[in-house]
Image (cartoon, rainbow, N blue to C red):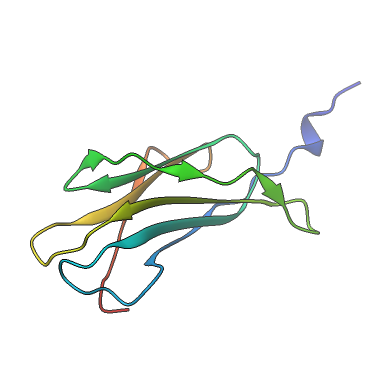
Amino acid sequence: MCLSGLYTYSVPKVQVYSRHPPEDGKPNYLNCYVSGFHPPQIEIELLKNGEKMKSEQSDLSFSKDWSFYLLSHAEFTPNSKDKYSCRVSHVTFPGPQTFVWNRDL
């Protein structure tokens, strides 16, 4: 019996945002919300100037369509000199993909 046809692949949708409107020097939280992906194996890293930040991650959850979602977040104090991003590794990507936080959104 061949089960390979049962596997589906869905590309993750990635959103990088702060919990509160950013103000230089004021503590905040950086969030990376990754949704709509399948299979569930995924790696999410929050980065400051390309270096991995200490972060926490929600439990893996799934939607009605059986796609998965996760939230990774870290405390940070934004300033205009630093670059923050989220790096995601998933089987649907050719390699790790980096999504930059746009503080103006």
